[in-house]
Image (cartoon, rainbow, N blue to C red):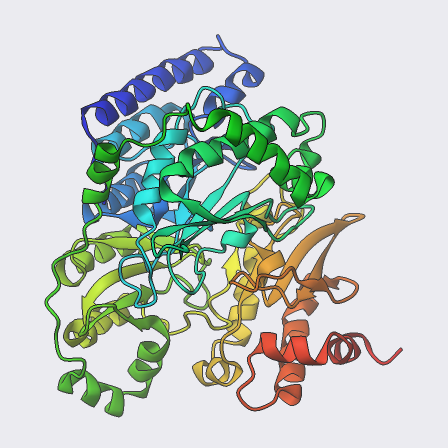
Length: 551
């Protein structure tokens, strides 16, 4: 993972000192909340329903054990003993006090972390495939390019005050595990016509009030042109994006109003006029950054381990967990292990300080000193020897972290909703817990098979409900919380936005509605079909009839 140089250390410390002064002036009444708001947002600090919320950047979802322990300490000392991992591969604290924020930022700086540009109308945390450098379908590790974009975009003088927030994701594998089509810019590393790697570029994706799947603006972009081309996209957006209406300010609106061809023409014209004089990444700097992402020196091992094989034969609970939460590594004899933060009864994405300390210990013992955060709100150890998996599992099981539901219905995404967020208009956490309770039987989840259920407490879609195979959106109708259900969304390569199936349900009726949808799917599916396969084949009619009746 990337290590700070002298400039990075000095820069982050200067920002901590600057914001400490701003906090002190706010506490002294020298700054009004209106004056303070843009300052705090530039440092990842939100004012939520009950307290301040601080969002910490975890670039491309990579953490060291030292950093995770520091996050655990901060949660224990300045919050309520936990943190919440988000769909942006970040971490949020929901109960920090304003007076303590400078100390929290200083503690983050001690371990090369910060909150810069985790909010505001700027380029946010660049996300990536959490299986990077471990997946056996990977063409190239996307994380160095995430780091290059992070350094380029931080306090960029032209793009620090965009019309609206801006999100980028990169995938370097055959399978898209970063939901690139639902980002302002999505980048996929592909093989070019001459055999060299470059980027397929998507633009204009996003969720929220007006969801869109990103459209291809370039089928192949050479690596050396990445910064200049993205700069042209941002320059066109900055020039023509709307600033008079917050709901129409995202680049997805501009792309769809102009049409992808006209938008592409504008970008290409700007790029042609500027890229020959633009400063793209110098080769020596590219190599310096790449060097920090060298994979661990893993010696290939036998693919079969007798102890593991015997455990899978004799322990069906372990076998189920292994089937779903373990993915084979590109190096024989190793695997990536998903540590589920979705045990039934817990808030999806929440991790206690004790759990974070434990995962840091396990990363040192079993995982070559690396932890990943995925956008579906789990933690991962990317480089685990297969022979060590039974011992790792036993420790996770004792800590309540061995739920074997990765990519199953119980592995749902859920935003904080009305329990915390002042933008939400409906609760999401209690509904998610009730659904998880109803479907907690591992055998039933196994029968259902892979299924993505996502839930948001408002139209801003922080829970990615648009891309869920089953999506749930909480809405307020004349003081009553109702929940719209959409079906058929998909965050992967054949990305799709879910279709609203009908009128919303009251909170108490939502778990039964999901049950009805699942029963309908099981009754209608052909052998080997996933939920998404069946939906695409039979369409909405049988689901509507089951939920609302024939009339």
